[in-house]
Image 1 (cartoon, one colour):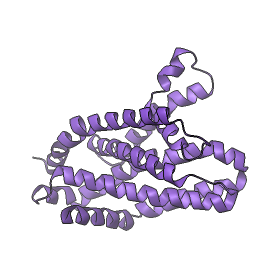
Image 2: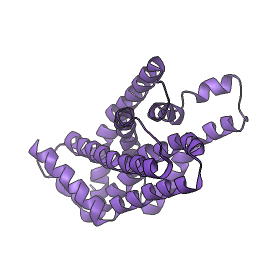
Image 3: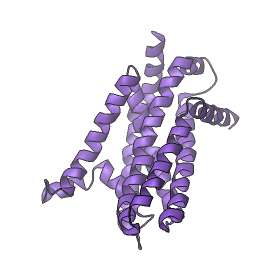
Image 4: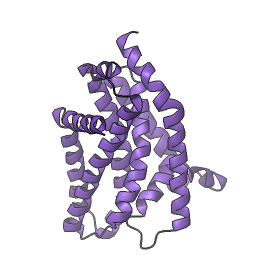
Amino acid sequence: MNKLKALIVGDFLRLAKYNLFIASVVVALIWVGLGLFLEPEQMVEFLPLVFFMEASAMTALLVGAEMYYEKKEHTISSMLISPITEIEYILSKVITHLINIMIILLLISVGLYFVNELVISYAWLLLSALIVTSFYVSIGLLLSYYSKDFTALLINYMFMMLIFLLPSVLVMFNVFDGKWIDIVKYMPSEVTLRILSSAIVSKVDLTQYLFDVVYLFVFGFIIYRLIVIPGFKKFATEYLGV
């Protein structure tokens, strides 16, 4: 427990040192500022996308950026000769970014309450953020595994967002219809949006919500178990040139 606590503290210090936490706060304030130009009804329609961008896209990018800076600091190489396991290291990343996203979403929710008088179900929002963020931390780790430098990280990040969001956008503009809508419905992006939308709908469809949570949990477990955890040591030793 003490080792995990030390890792989490170190992660937050790096988020602060490299202004990654400040960047998250600034983006959150931009979303709140957007509420000044939209009617409450429009903001309600737009809010699931805001939560999606923060809990998924921003989380994945922050994890990737943090891993990049840890390369420069030789933190990863130090971990290899320490009593810390790769599972503890990865778990610290998950917990750190869970705490970070809770702070950011709380800031957005409180800000929009004062700007647009929007009332959000914080219990559903926090529960959904826990599930979604845990999944997208794995995506951020994968981005760092397959990015040689920060430029490659940004390119891979944009490519990931294109894959995740393009099908949803095409359905929105009626480019896809019929059976394609059913397929897109179970893309990770659509599942994420439905889960996060639970914070603002009047009544949550518990059956659909449970299905989406199980879907994302199983998908995330497979990524962690088969790719993220086994691939970490290879990623760390490649950096050392071993």
